[in-house]
Image (cartoon, rainbow, N blue to C red; front, side, top):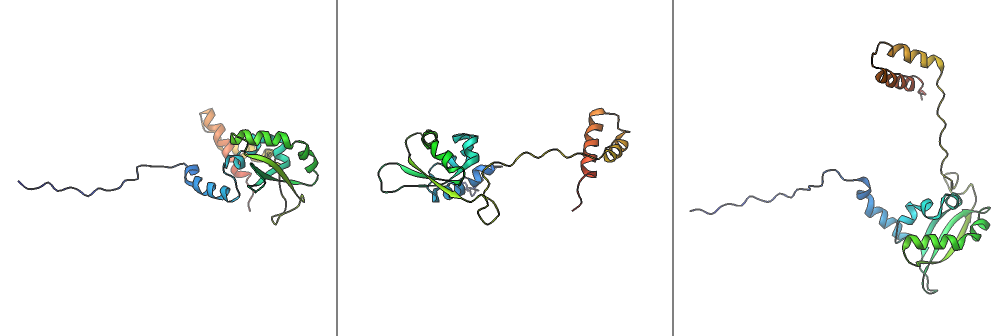
Length: 174
């Protein structure tokens, strides 16, 4: 009787498709930890944690762990005009941030002011971008799209094709 030969084991990944968030998770964690953020959720969900009103006025910059005792210092960036409003809300901000961490991680908050037109790219934008108004489509374009799709018998398909035609015909030619 001869010995049975073993086939070499091939390593399979077995993961298939992976979420983009799982691929970037370690890099995001490393980048946020370099700024002192042990929990990157504070950066990514800032408006959910402190509220939309405060998120429009300020954003977190770094967390510093100094020698002044227990707790860290959160540095937030704002424009000069918003700093007094934030100063009045500091206890509420600290409570909300500590609720995110689950313990009293932040003992002090430092406000750093910048000009509203600061940074190289042009402006330090604190408010989220406003929603774009839908474009108005020229009536001649609507007429042309409906004329082309008129032979289609299915009403839903005809409407979808007309919308597609309107979007293509009204597209700006850069």
